[in-house]
Length: 604
Image 1 (cartoon, one colour):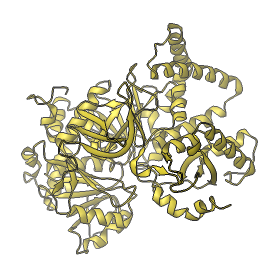
Image 2: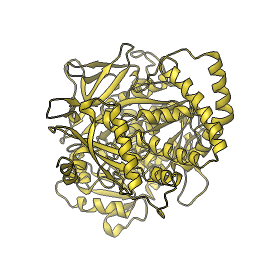
Image 3: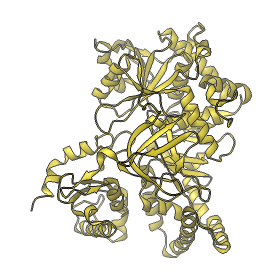
Image 4: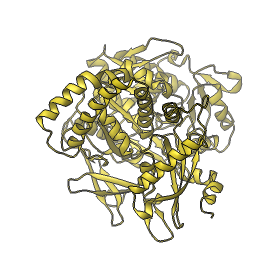
C-alpha cells in the first residue's frame, strides 16, 4: 500500500469496502476483532471472513429499517464489537456513520441530531436511550428510529439490535459497489473546547491517504495488534481502530472500559500504543508508586538502569551519535532490568509509543525514556484526519518536545503570527452544513488554518506552543502560552492537572489539582497517615506544592511565572465538564466554574 499517488494502484483510489473484501479473501482466517463479553475472562474473536459476513448481514438489517444511501446515522456506544461492525455495515449500505461521544450532554446530543439530519441512531442501552427518546417526537429533528443494543424496551420506542442480522437479503450490502473514493465515509464532530461542535466531513480517499502515510512512516510487524480504548468519536481512535486495520490487516482488541486498560495491555502486548498525555501520566503514576514501594536495594538497581536508558534515549532524541559502550550498557540494562518491568505493563513489544491530542509534559517523556520507552509526540486535528506531523524512533527523526515533521502527502507552513497552516491529501473535505452540503474550509490554495501556534526549526521539526485563541496577554502586554506554564507546573508528580489564568491581569495565577494516586503514594513515603485520601489542605501537601510552584518558576521567564495558586483535590474530567471527551482542557468551563477562586487570587 505504498504506491505513488496518481498511479493506477494508488491506495487512495479505493474504498473501505474494497479493503474489507480483500482482507476476507486473502486473509480469511486471520483475527480481525476481539472483545470480552461482560463478566467473561476469555476473549471472543471474529476472523476477517467472519467480520465481513457479519457486516453484510448488518448492512441488510439497517437497510430494512430504512437506511438509504447518503443518510447520516448516529452511533452512541462504547468500544464494543457492535460499534465497529455497525460502522462498516452502514458504510456498505451507502450511509455516513457518525459516533457521538458517550459523555455528550443532552443538549449536545440534540444539536448533533438536528445538524446531521440523522433519521436513525444506534445506542447502547436504555439509560443512554433516555437522552434520545424525546428526540423521536421533536419536530426539529429527522430522527425516526432508535436501535438499542442491550435490554431494549419496545414500549419506549426502542428497536432491538438483536435480529438485525436476520433480515432477508435485499442487495443493500452491494450498495458499496456504487461508492467512489470521494464519497463521505464519516462525519466527525469536534469535541468543542469552545462553542458548538463542527462536523468535519471526511471521504474514503482522505482516510486512506492518512492511513497509508502512517503505514509508510511506522515500521510495524505484519498484521499487528491494536488496543481500542479511546472514544471512537475521536478521529485518532477511529483512524487507528477502524480505518488503519483495513489497510494493515490488523487485529483490533476492544477495551470497553478504559479503566481496564492496565489489565488488558499485558495480554495484548501491542507493537504500537497511542495515549493522550493524561493516559501516559496516569500510567506513569502507577509505575512510580510501584517502584517507590520496592526495597531500597532493588530500587537502586532499577535507578541505575534508568539512568543509562535516559542517557541513551536523550542522545538519540538530540540526534547525537551513541557511544558503543553506552549502546552495550543500554542493551544489558534493557534486557535484564527494564524488560521485566515493561512485560508486566504489556509494553515490552512496543516499536512505537505515541502521544497525541495535547503537548506531553517533558518530565513524563523523560520518565518513560528512563524505562526504555521513547514516547513520540505526534500532532494533528480532526480536520487533518488524524496525524499531520510525527516523531519516529529512528535517529534524527525525532526531537524531544517537538511534534515531529509532516507525514507523507502533507505540507506545513507558518503565518506571520505563527499560526500553523496545513495542506495535503489527507486534509478533510470541509464542514457539514445543516442542509447536508459541505462548506470548504481551505483557502484558494488549499491551506487550512489550524488555530495552533508554533515554530519550525532548522531541521523541519514543528514545535506547537499553544492555541491561537488561548494565548494569554497580560496587562503589561506580554504574550504567554498557558500550556507551556501548565506543563512546567505538572512536572511535579503531585500536580496532576493545572490551569493558568491571567488574560488582561498583571500576573499569572493557577488552579492546581492533586493527582489522587500519586499523593497517596507520596504521603505513604513521607510517613503521613491520613487513613485514606490525602486532603488538599494537609499542611505538608500544601508546603510541597508551594515548593513545586517555586521550582517551576525558576524555569520560566518573569511574565510566565505564577505568583499565586489555589490547590484543589477533585479531579477534572469529561463527566464533570472540565475536560472534553478527548481529555482536552475546557478553559472557559473551568474559569467560569472557579471564577470566585480565581478572583480571590488577585485580591490583596
